[in-house]
Amino acid sequence: MLRDIKRRYPTTEFHSNIYTPYPGAPNFRQAITMGLREPQTLEDWAAFYPKFQKLPWLDDSTHQRIQRIREYIRIGFGAAPVGRRSRARQAVVRMLAPAARLRLRRNQYAVPMELWLLKSLSHIRSAVGLSIRTHVVRP
Image (cartoon, rainbow, N blue to C red; front, side, top):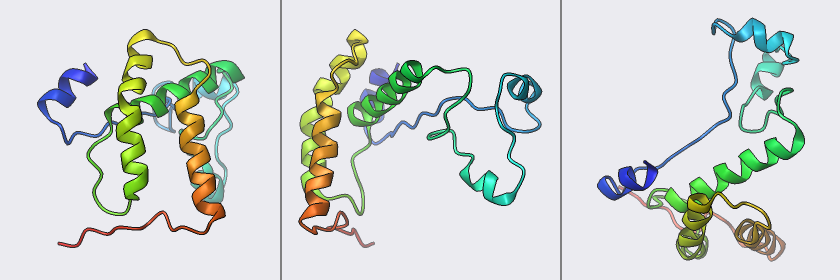
């Protein structure tokens, strides 16, 4: 489905999250009984972000697998970047996109070399003091 949508609408960008029920959702109380910690303060709510939240009903390996799938979706089916992404990173992501789509098609996420490469490049750029925001598109 992602491939079909992307083919028809090339600038479409996909974002995914692990479903996390919020207060008022029909299954929120069930999630609390399963171990979800309900935020008590505004600071707790600020930190209540499903992308980074470790949900109690997911073991570590399942959570890690889902996060890898999310990263491969972003690499394989991201939109054409606009704005403040570095050109070098854009080029690397474009180069890795076919491998990411292949991994998604084959459902293979072990030894995520592409993700390690992107993370390594980010660390190298930080170490040498290069700004990630190297290009800004102005209207």
